[in-house]
Image (cartoon, rainbow, N blue to C red; front, top):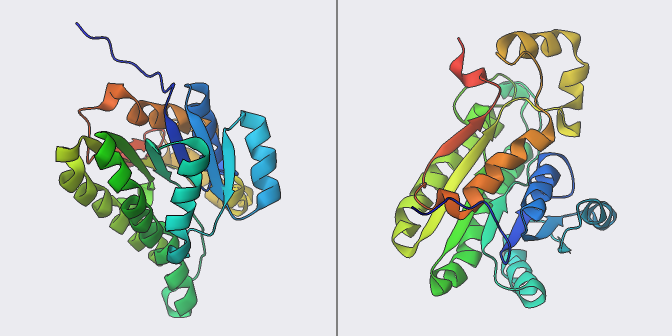
Length: 251
C-alpha cells in the first residue's frame, strides 16, 4: 500500500502576496516541507526580509494586477529557479465602504487582484505544467466566498468568482494531471485585519461566532497548503478547504 507523502522536495512553488500575513505563512510551510519557494510582492525590502526569515529560495517584485507583467514574471522565475510546480494565488487587498459609497476604482482593484490575477497567472504557468505532466494550483479564497458581509461586497464578489474559477480550472486541467483547489481562511490575526481586531465589538463577534473561540494564527493555514500541494492530494481537485475554526459550520 502506497503511503501518502507530504514531502515537497524538488518542487518549485510561486506564492503571490508572499511577503507578509497569510502568504508568508503559506510560503514558510511550503519551504519547511522541502519546496523551493519564490515569494512575489510589490515591496522589495519586505520581500527580502521575509525571504530571509523563512529561507525562501528567492523573491520576485511584481504587481500581479498588471497582466502584461505576468508572462515575464513566470519566465524569470523559471529561468532562475526552475519549472513552477506549485502556484499559490494569494495576493489580496481589502477596502470597506457601503455600496452607495464604494468607488469604481475600488471595485476594479478588487477584481483585478482577486480574480483577474489568478486567471492570468494560471494561464502563464499551465503550459509548462501540461508539458511536464503535473502541477498544483492553490487559490486563497475566504469564508466570504460562501457568506456575505456588509461593506465588502466587491471583495465577496471577487472571492466568489475565484471559487468558480477554481472549479472551472479543475475541470479543464484535470485530464492533464493538474489539481486546482482553494483554501478559504476564516478570521486570522493579520495586519490586514488589524482594524477589525482592534474593534472591540467586532472582535467579540468573531470570538463568539467562531466555535474555536478565537482568531486563527497565520501558521495554522500552512498545513492546508502543504497538503494540497503534495502528492497526498493527487486525487483532490475543484475543492475548497475551509480553515476557519468552525466558523462556516455554525449558525
